[in-house]
Length: 170
Image (cartoon, rainbow, N blue to C red; front, side, top):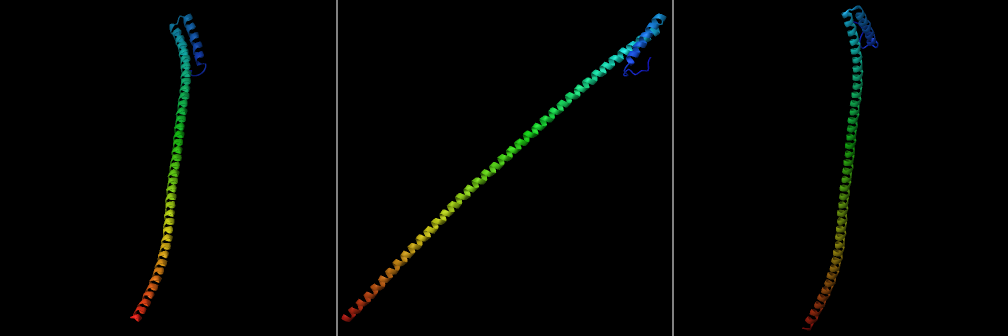
């Protein structure tokens, strides 16, 4: 048997050559053991060739599996990134909607405050007008009262004068 590693290039050829030489020598010499040893070398060469083919195929399949796995990893990563992007866009949209809602609430509050302020101003103007009208009414009433007092004083003076005349005549 040979000590050559079956994975070493050329070891299959060397075993095949050895096997052929031993098989031929065993047949020529009539040595069945030698012939059988030659056949074993050929089988070893065939097995080494088959092992090399299988190893190459296994390596190729391993590489293909790594490529498929890497493609899957990339696909999963792309899906994760797409999901993150979609979540970020949803968050941005929600933020925009929150801001719009806050702005709408602030605008409505400002409108209500403006309406309250207008109503307050109108009420103050009405109250001021009523005060002016009341002051004018009071002034007119005071003037009327003064006129009436003056007439009353004049009537009193006339009555006193008439009383004096009546007393003198009597």
